[in-house]
Image 1 (cartoon, rainbow, N blue to C red):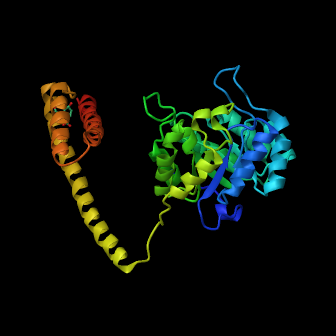
Image 2: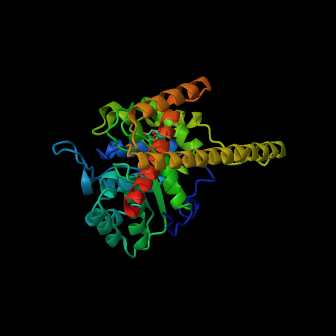
Image 3: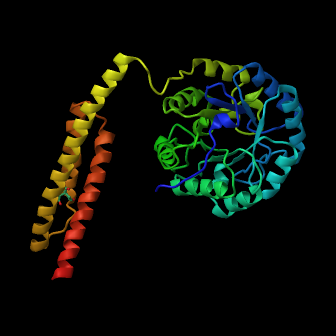
Length: 367
Ligand SMILES: O=C(O)C(=O)C[C@]1(C(=O)O)C=C[C@@H](O)C=C1
């Protein structure tokens, strides 16, 4: 999938002095005092560029706190007037957009529960036509890259060019220590489809618990993300939503201090030569791996023709079991994770079955 998107670089609409963009603020705006005090403390860190606050909260089940709605917007205006920090809120309907713009909200984000629904995203896109506002789009709740891509196409189609993605992790149904499984490869794939699209990590929603915020933020930085969006509350344990994953502004500042921000490259000559040589060696190994794969496939093809002529099924459970066991054992002895070898062999085996099916079906047609 290769698509074109017009994206203005982040630094054209927000000055971060070359540092990663830091967005922070409470999960929900609860009271004027809570909003203003949180924003004051975040401003004092001297590291936050944009304030986030949930005003309309999509909740899985009715009956829980669904946000203060329009009443909270003047509090955000007060916090902005006092600190000079721009404000971001989540919008899910055309009415939210109208109200957010009426109260001078600077940045809008589309939530994970909205990105899943193309009708909803299109309504938002239509409401944004003719408006020049930065829009951040969270990944859909489920790991469906096309929905995320489609949301960008719809919003960009309405003329929005100040765009960024928020990677908040996915509900996969698997058990994980995280609330939402990061699936980092989804963001990497999005970035290869839209190379100029900035990606912002949302460790709060991935983690679900503040204990995991450090490691997830570091991972996002190591993957060269353009920024972080983190939930911070003056009294997290008393927060009306997402209490377990919010940090006090002070704890958030400490976390930021401990983050290692690495550079994409180094001008050091020795480093450059070493990288150059290592990459040539990797190229060599990779070529051999691909040649080996092709050699294996050629063997499978011959074997499939024999199976076809002798009327034998292509899937051989006992042999497959033996392959998985022996290959993961060999890998383990060489220091490879068994899961890695297993995943690679599952793909190879499926391709082998696909190729054999093709050969068998061809015979039926030719017969
Ligand atoms: O050994 C076979 O019978 C094959 O068809 C080859 C192969 C493989 O790719 O290694 C493919 C399918 C079977 O389930 C087991 C193994």
